[in-house]
Amino acid sequence: MDQRMNIYITPELQEYMRRKGKRHISVEVASADHSDFDVTELYFRIIDDRTVGFLKKKRYRAVETGEGYVMLPPYHLQYDENVTFRLKKVLVFHTVTADGIRL
Image (tube, rainbow, N blue to C red; front, side, top):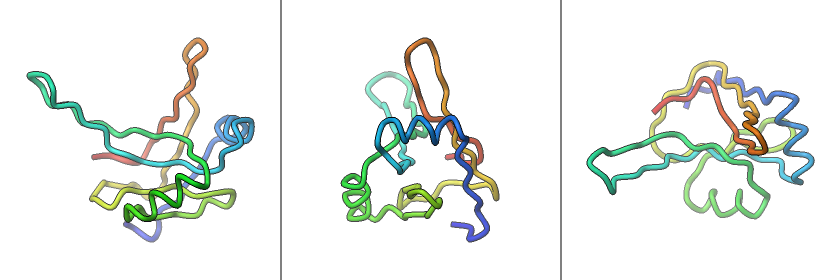
């Protein structure tokens, strides 16, 4: 991991995380290989303190954000110098998206 990586969390996402009572974000790779096509994509979710402990046991790296951690997986991903996490709202559904992280 590049030590110069700057992590930004938008104010909208920070407020949403506060309302949910969670302070951390995990970065995970989700794969589906049950069809003719293998699909692999990044998956971001907000997590609680207990899940942080679980992911640390799985060798995830904790990067401090000031209010919590971003948990990065133990395998190689490409990180830009600036990584931004955002809240995406579609109707009543909320998801976390990120710029600056790639498979």
